[in-house]
Length: 335
Length: 93
Ligand SMILES: Nc1ncnc2c1ncn2[C@@H]1O[C@H](COP(=O)(O)OP(=O)(O)OP(=O)(O)O)[C@@H](O)[C@H]1O
Ligand SMILES: [Mg+2]
Image (cartoon, rainbow over all chains, first blue to last red; front, side, top):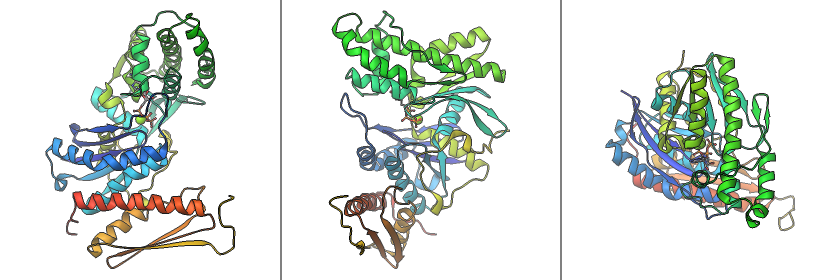
C-alpha cells in the first residue's frame, strides 16, 4: 500500500490531493478568480496560493482521514507553469517533506493530467488530446515516452477561449471556458472563422485576433449575439482539434482516445470527439471537472507511478521550471 | 534603470533569522536554498544555516531587483514558518 499526496499550483488553481493505490482519498482545490475582463498575473496568483495552501492541506488530510505519518511520498508540480505560483506551492511541499521525514518527488504537470485520465477512465493505451489554458497537444505513448504528435504553434486553445471571454467580459467563475460553453449552448448563427490546421499542428492566434476585432461591431449591429460568437468559436476550434486527433489516431492505429486538461470537460468537445471516435470504431474516454481541471490528485497519481518504480528527487533538486515538455519525461512505469 | 544605484559597490542586504531549534533552521534552509533567483534578476543570494539561525545575504547593483528579491524571500519565509506552526513539529530522524 502506497499513499501519495500531490501539490498542484502551476496556474490559478491550488489543489492538494491524496491517492492510495489508485483510490482518490481527497482532492480539495481553491481557485483564484479574477474580475471579468482580467487574467491572472503570476505575483497575485502566488499570493493566492500562499494564503490558501495550508487550509487546503488541512482539508485534504481531514477528508482523507489520514495522519502525516501514513503518507509515503510527497509529490509536487515541477512544471510547466507560472514560476512564482509553482515555487510557492513547492515551498509547502518541501517543508512538510522535511517536517514529516518523507521522500519528495517532482512531477511533470502534463504527465499528471494523462495518468489521472487513464486511471479514472480505465483507458489503457489511448491517443491523448491534452487541452488546457497553457497547453494543446496530441500525444501517444511509444517506447517509454509520451510523444507529441501535434500541438499548437502559438497559443493554447484554453487561452484562446479565456481571452475571448475577456472581450465579452464574462465571469471567470468557475472558469472563462465554462461560461463560454454555457453561452454557446444558446447560439445558433454560425460565423465563419479562420480555420488553421497545418499538418499535425494547429494555430489559434490568427483566429483569436480576427474574432476579437470583429466581435464588438457584430454584436453592436445586432448581426450576431455573444451566444452566436461563442458557438462559432467553439465549433471552429474544436473541429480543428478533432481533425489533428483523428490524424494521430489513424497514424498510430489507435482504438482509444482520451481527453484531458481543463478544456476537456467541455461537453460539446466530448460530443464531437465521440462522433469521430464512433465513426472510426474507436472508444472515447473523458472525465469531468473534478479531474480535468488542474487538481492535486493528478500530481499524486503520476507521483505514485514514479515512486513505484523507485524514483524520488533529492531535496536540493526540487526546483521548479516554467518550461517542461511532456516528452522530456522517461515513462518508467509503463511497458 | 534610472532609480537604481550604479556605483561599483553593490547594494547589500543581510538578514539573520532565528528559529526555535536548530532542526527548524535546517528545514527552512532545506526549503529556501533550492530556488535560483529569476534569470532577469541581477541579485546574488546566498543562504547559510548555523545552529538555530538562518543567514541570508543579498547583493545587487539594482535597488529594485534587490527589493523584489528581499520581499519575495519574506513571503516564502513566512510560508515556511506557518507551515511549521501548523504541520510541525519536526518528526524525529
Ligand atoms: N467547460 C469548459 N469548456 C471549455 N474550457 C474550459 C471549461 N472548463 C474549463 N475550461 C478551460 O480550461 C482551462 C484550464 O485548464 P486547466 O485547469 O487544466 O489549467 P491550466 O492552468 O490551463 O493548466 P496547464 O495548461 O498547465 O495544464 C482554462 O482555459 C479554462 O477556461
Ligand atoms: Mg492543467
